[in-house]
Image (cartoon, rainbow, N blue to C red; front, side, top):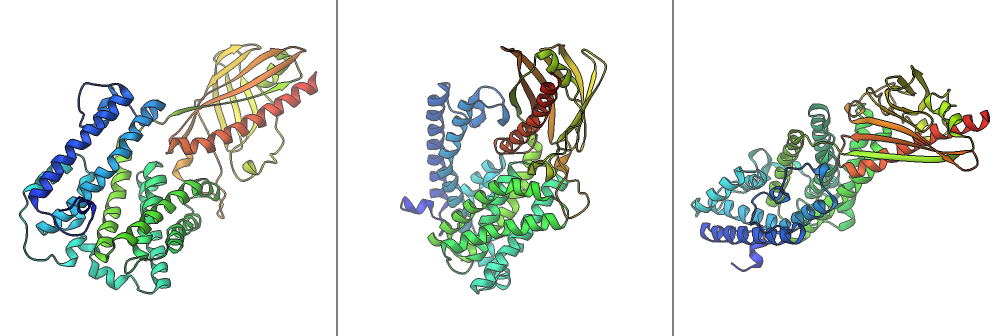
Length: 465
């Protein structure tokens, strides 16, 4: 077998060659990991079979430093060719042993994959050619797909879009309604796999053009978004927020599918890969739910200067009167906005209520340093938004307990000329992944909330001088 043949999916490979490639690949992979670990972490203690172990301590993704994140990203990129090699060789070995190629998905299951690779090293070869149905799972065999997927370009494109939309809606409902997880599986793996899945369907019989594949990859997202709106699972604002990351990843999935189908393609390979995706996505959702990642904490600070002394500003910070209705499109579309603030008591232990358009925040005072600092916790939060929907009211799971404000404060700094710099700070957690993407939205919204309150306090304080 030539070196380039190792990376191809077609053909067969004997158990001896498979065992040698497995052993050599395993050794090279861990030597590469060891060198990366030495470079990033200066760790010389030896090889690790768990990439997380080289960090030295158990750690969640949300707790990684920037340096540790770069280290793990490098490890992941270095692992990609070995993953491809392992899958390609396993597929060829399964053909040689007369087994269904879709079993190669076991390669991604911890512990089971070691037993699976060992079993393939000893599985006897079969001399008889395998029937095409062996390439896919029994319920997704090529013969059945031949009868399901139309051959015409327009008809196959329509079938691919509808099929990907149905699969996407089913998996989305499974993740959000049943598992109630809004994470990497939902916002990263699902759109990527939908783009890839639709292109595999579209190019089932013959290679297709690049622009056609990208269009077929993106259109299911529009169908899924419209369906979510029609069945009252989501509102317009949340769909628009998720659209940028979903479109990019679906396009990447489409590009990947296009690359595959112009390089080496057959209906049997299509069946195997589609089957692997259908099986892998629920497993990703379940693994993410089981991991129960701790959401990262983010802090947003906003400040402005007021032409009034701190003593005057303080009185409007503790409690402020009704704010006029918003003119910003963001708030008029349904994002929760502050209306007024009330307080019961004085000093630490007093209870402040910041009333929003969706309900009150309950804020017990922790620090009362008049007129410099008012700091409070948050024991109860209302829904972060009212969904923009054709229906009267919908309540998707992510409106309850996924965005949590933990602490907030107002800091007043005296400036020359009887002026005051007022800074509002909010500390929050957002249990929607990937955190860095959704942070862009939540930080912007919180900043606008801060500005609405600070500008109202500024107007009140300057008018009262």
